[in-house]
Image 1 (spheres, rainbow, N blue to C red):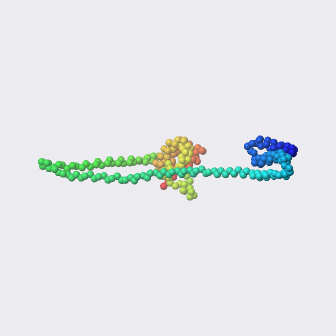
Image 2 (image 1 turned 90 degrees about the horizontal axis):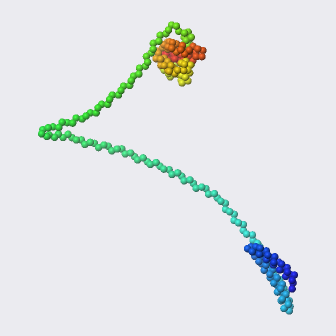
Length: 268
């Protein structure tokens, strides 16, 4: 009996058994076939020795060819995850258009029913005739009040004085216009209140009337009432120019421009 071969087979069986026992849940078919092959050869070692002793002629040992191990087929790769397609958000519901209710057609009011005409029925009772009913006429509307007539202020008669300051007199000296632009600047003015713009009114009020807007307005009303530049000149010299010092160096230029505009009120 070949003990050396039996020992080798027994060691192989023990090693394979130890590996299979460590991972009992994952024993492959190749390991099972290999274990069966080792056990069969180990059995044949002892079985062949017994047959050889009992048999007159030894029979040739049948060689056992272990089955070829099946090729290990790798498991199929896991399926690729399908790409997640982001679903677009649901469309916003369109706002419901609420149509305003159509106005009901306004039917014209029914015409008033005509009053029944009651004919005068004269009944004669004991030869007495009923007197006819007199119709009352509506009272006439009160007369409209006539608009009040506003009379323009009467022009003041101003007589010139003999002792006039020569410097004040010089403010009213005017040169004859030669160029066309100068002639156009002397066009007539109907109302002095509209002849000056806002900036001019503020400038003349502060420089020529001591900053008193009431004095400026009163002077404009009086100048509008005059009929000639001579009257305006006498009034300005006696009441305004001397009082507010128009002949001073800083006010002469504004005073001459103001007088030049005032003179256009009396151009005929």
